[in-house]
Picture 1 (cartoon, one colour):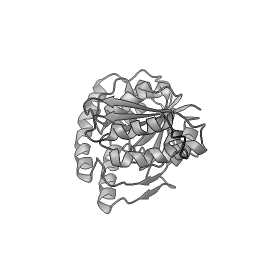
Picture 2 (cartoon, rainbow, N blue to C red):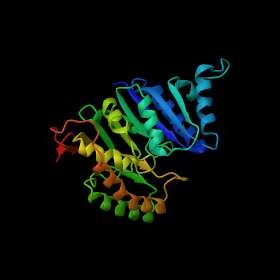
Picture 3 (cartoon, rainbow, N blue to C red):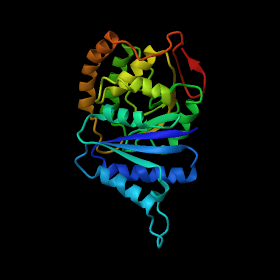
Picture 4 (cartoon, helix red, strand yellow):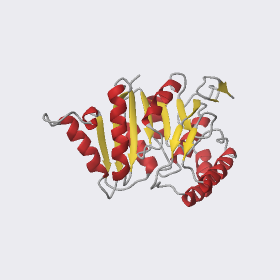
Length: 270
């Protein structure tokens, strides 16, 4: 299974390098999983782009007098740069529309979900069109979520149930798709910012795609771009977004297919 990994990054110079190091170590042990890694630098004002270029240089021109570094094991690393900041959704869209793998996965640049979770999503996509990491399912392990963040997350998930999305961890930054499905969902993306996940999940339900939820490991990282206040404010923007989507035609899909949202056990749950 040839997979593309998309990493949207905005001002991530401090957190991106450790995550790329972990991907390099994982790829060295599991070279069959990732065909390409695409970092989309979304108009960062820091050295995010330079971090990626340093990895690329190490892979192309390793120092013969030194032991190979982890960086040398990312020869398939690509960098796409937005001149201006466009939003996380726009960055993910750019990466997905450029991806060449049969499977396309996106993960947050802070490494909140470790790369060692990748085999789970690839397994899920053997029988699904879309797979979503879920931090709240039995078997999930979440670290360092503050009480306030857990409460705001609960409120957000409760609100999402009003739109038929309560069983999907829409805000989890670890999702995967078959490439044709990904392009169908992202080609006409309306929401370029944080709520793009909600749009994609809502459209997937409209298209009656086969969706798998699977429990993941997740560790909240310092420096999160989406704080508790921003999360609650985003909740107020969901209804206008859903209303716009309802008024627009869904992406091209097969209306005869039954929507099935299941867990990684393979047992589909209606």
